[in-house]
Image (tube, rainbow, N blue to C red; front, side, top):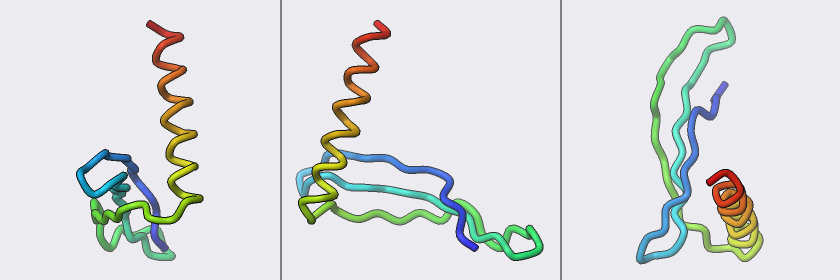
Length: 66
């Protein structure tokens, strides 16, 4: 099974890049591979909207806790 271990949203010239890392864990709990990294550019409007909402929430949280 694949277990997500990290996610980041990065603003690039191409748009919003989602980068993530994960581990491949066997049914018996054995780690087959770890720190596997992948990324992609958000192109569909639904995902872009979700990213905007998340960034807004984080920005609000950041400003509340100054």
